[in-house]
Amino acid sequence: MKRIIFCFDGTWNRLSADTPTNVVLTAASIMRQAPDGITQIIHYDEGVGTDRLEHWSGGIIGSGLVENVREAYRFLIFNYDPGDEIYVFGFSRGAFSAQTFVGFLRHVGPLHRLHAARIDEALELYRQRLTESPGSSDRMRRFRADYANKVCIGTDDDDWRCRHVPAYVQGAAPLFAIKYLGVWDTVSALGLPAITPFSAHLNRKHAFHDAGLTNFVESARHAVAIDERRALFPAVLWGDLTEINKAKSSSADALDAPYQEKWFPGVHGSVGGGGDIRGLSDGSLAWVLKGAKLAGLRLDVEHGSRIHGFAPDPFAPLINMKMPEKGFTDIIRTDRPGPDHLWQLSAAAIRRWTANAERLPERTLYRPKALSKVSERLSAHLITQTAPSSDLLTEHVVQSGDALRKLAKQYYGDAKLWGVIFEANRDVLDDPDELFVHQRLRIPAQSIVEAV
Image (cartoon, rainbow, N blue to C red; front, side, top):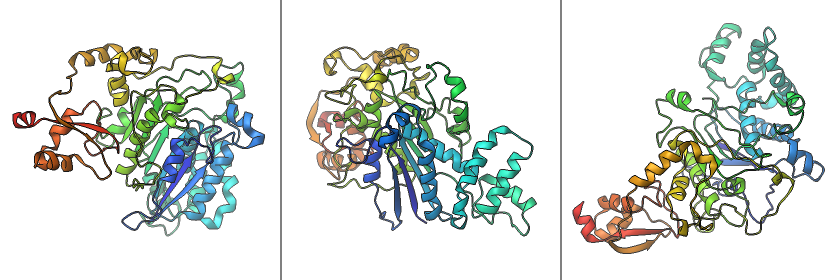
């Protein structure tokens, strides 16, 4: 078994850029061989519009996406073996590419490498599936049984082969699925934005793409930008994840829910990276990578790696560039719909909302219109919030290898008191198992510990 990781970058984003996106940081931080000996191989795809000839067509209407998906599929065909784990990441229109790639795999499966020449046939079947012509579903199943027969797409595929494929034995081909999908601020990569004249008519030819989230993906996380207001960058949302989580015996508001979509402070690049200010994008990066690590992906976090020392900061500037450039995409602006529930907000967004104006670079309270549907509940949260203890023993700067149990042992002589440090730092810590190098933690005084 090996792990195959697909990384689709955002519009106009290149691997050679001085300010890497979260996709680049992810790709560059994946261990080639995990500590357990499992090989991890990476396919990185530069964003649509990076080729000089397609710079504008790719950046505006996403031409080039189909070719990006084709290249990723070709890589999969020649590298995949049944039982391999597949992880997919993407940012911006690259996130749409990532989800389109996943949807394509759900319909056609991974071709056996002997049938690699049938990629175009697979794409055409994928396009035609929406015609709902008689027998179209069976044609797709027959195609998979003939040319992607080493795996099944769900138990229905397995049952169909038992009925229609001579000598096939139930369970002979293992089920094929995506281990993890992690995306930042998905933007539709094909066609003209809905605000443009005739967009509905002109975009019909792109309607065959399946970028929806299903249980074909075992777990997934989507970080969405609260403060992105460019109308040409509308977020493509997963929506209500209640039922898909319920099918996995989880509630959508659970901290460990397998499928999560959360809103983060900042504009598009402040969530997906690519600027010279990384405080906010480091936060969304940490959250998406946390999901990947829970799914089994192994990352290099040691000194010298691309993510060693990254520092999530919910109070960093909302725009991730010191000298942002204005362009034609800034002309038309509108607020995003925002979350419907408080649990759809990231911890970073809640911390920024509850912060004093003096703590924020803009020197004003954080009250974006995109959060209007949850503003009353946020205000109630502000009232009930407990201030951190000011009775401190010291302040600890996190070093590589630190953990709360280790710090509790160091300062109190008892590792079991790690919860005291965690509770004293709930305004900066989301997860007791996730500390970041250079993070500053309060160490409560002995009197606080004795009162526990």
